[in-house]
Length: 198
Image (tube, rainbow, N blue to C red):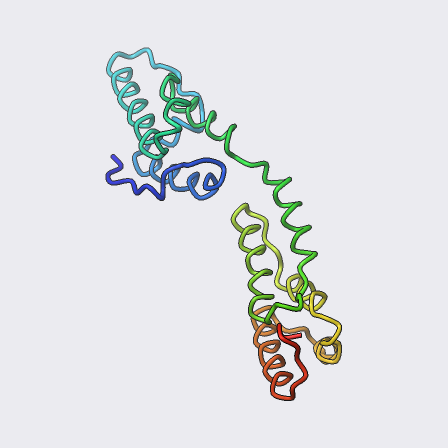
């Protein structure tokens, strides 16, 4: 059974459903109980099988109860099976990934390096959205991130953008970040940057 489930691993609501889901599924799989939340497990006819089925069903329900915060217990405690419990939690807290991905991608496309931003804070914004998308299974290819970053740089960086675009091959995202940090340092040394790195 699952011992010592940490509070941070327990389902609190929609905010941590995406990290909770794989944890609880692994705990169930570890105990050979994954079937009890993935499909309806009909009660067997054989008496010895029936006893094992009841015990496993109870174990699966116990794992689900152990992996939720106390305020969620009334939602699932009266349900008869682990699949009902899991599906109920999923139905309430699993944010529609398609809608979320569209919203995150739209926000990512609008990331700009503002006057108060340094290169590091600008790239952290892009990285944040990449990680949020990755968490829901929507991977952004490196080349798209490079293009988004170049498009998000301010007008004052146009000569730098032209130099990058003039290369035979665009750099990877991490290399572009390093190049931008160097460029920011060069511009700052020449007194060509404003207060936020622009």
